[in-house]
Length: 81
Image (cartoon, rainbow, N blue to C red):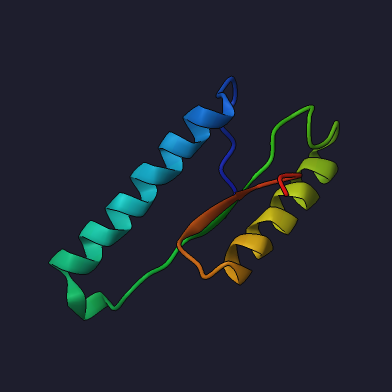
């Protein structure tokens, strides 16, 4: 899934992702019959991580795969270490 948060700071995006993670955790607790869900997120910011939609998508995608490699249920920012 792709979520675009116009006029949002990186910190605001992290807050948004935190709320998503909390919602998934609550869903798993209240409805264990649905199974455990995880969320791996890659964040990219314009223009820092790309000037075009394609560049931003590639940066966010690379950050998302870094999050998956880190153990899932985590967030990685494009271009960060």
